[in-house]
Length: 222
Length: 222
DNA sequence: CCTGCTATTGACCATCCGGTCAACATAATT
DNA sequence: AATTATGTTGACCGGATGGTCAATAGCAGG
Image: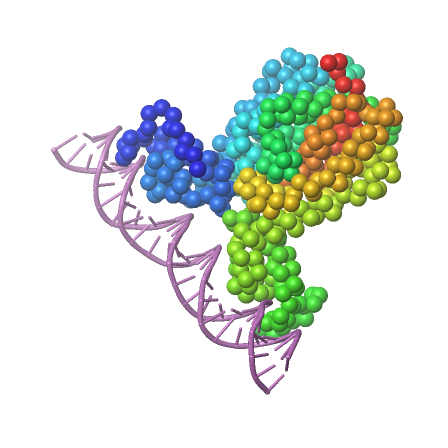
């Protein structure tokens, strides 16, 4: 396994820097959890990765699960930070939606942690996430943006009327998520790297087209 | 304790029935792997679930990884069996594609094993899958059907010309997969069960519409 | 009935791993 | 400098866990 080069100055052994230590541990934990999952991750590997005694993990995070929850929260923060809502509004409904789809895809590509941890958390039926509690708010700003774009699109006669925002959000995410989450099995099945730039571009364009085409389409007569 | 009457025929303890034992072990393993993942699964739990001595798992499957590979192959067989290609052709290009999208979604809903094991296998970068080797062929019949539907749709002037089959397959799968794979975290985020029949129906319809709308749309001028 | 053959078992083992703890080090406070 | 508070460490622990093995039991063929 590749040792990540440590950014900047390395924390001096034995020095007292609680915040710095916590950050180093968290970063190392996210790495390890991403690679091995919750059950597969090893506390001493995380400790070594953070250049810290194993006992310190328990001092700061209580338990493996405590560290997992912290890692989860970190990842969800990334998810929130990934969207630039203001920029979307400026593009108008059609291109705004297309861009949102592209951005979502890119976010998952850039952050395998998100995909890996969310997968594992679903294995546990979101037990830790529900314990953490403060998640639902996470999606609100994004949802608000989507609602605005949809409303604008409808008002301009560009979008169909029967769109369910939640479903649309799920679909848009799914289009990007699956491609990244199943990168390896898909690559094995198709006998070619899915992450070659050309293929990425093809897919990204298609995914945007798909969302836009759906929004524009006339719903079948009820 | 007294042997209660057991549901179905239970394998008699100590009796020699290699095939039956293997099947029972495999079924139990798929269950355990689905719930806990590869690292989280426990060999003795699998043994207990199959009503068999732990040693027998190693006799028949060699190791935990050996059992994992067997479980993976089982799951991929489900994936192949999930598609009824002949029926699709009969529906014509548009409705055939829509049906294919619906069926894919339903397959993932009906078989959480598929989703769970594929996720875990991607964590390992498809190492075991590539070792198993015979996977690429799996997708061939499905791809052939998709190609046929696409060709028919193009010939009838119903579909756009620039569709990449592989990308389409990935997109279609992703639309269904994500909804199932992230059932729990999404339900937590939206504070409502994603698997309520009404919501499932809404999403299924939308997903089909999305695929069809894309295929029908006129590509933007190059 | 005897002779292999192998499916099956239960006891056993070596190691791994999350977690604990007493001791120590450093910074802030008095 | 002494006191207090707490960040940090390394040694240690006990239970869990993947895997082994010798012994047994059922089956097939002679």
